[in-house]
Image (cartoon, rainbow, N blue to C red; front, top):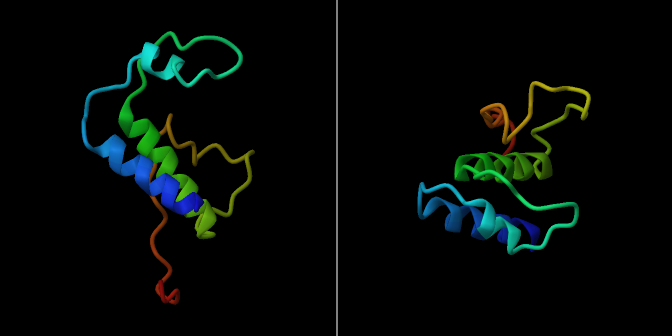
Length: 86
């Protein structure tokens, strides 16, 4: 179910290249304040792909490792494991 939700969101985000404005994101009612800047869709697509890679076991580092920071550093999905039949 989580994979389907992420895939659906990624498809919806991919339908346009226009950034999401702060007011659109405020409609989601996150606690802790309002958004004050635009969010690039590519950042959210990077985060979605990284989450899928995490579920697939392709990301093995901890939160202390800052080389993998989807949404802020351009994310590159790890190379597929040639021994993995997926």
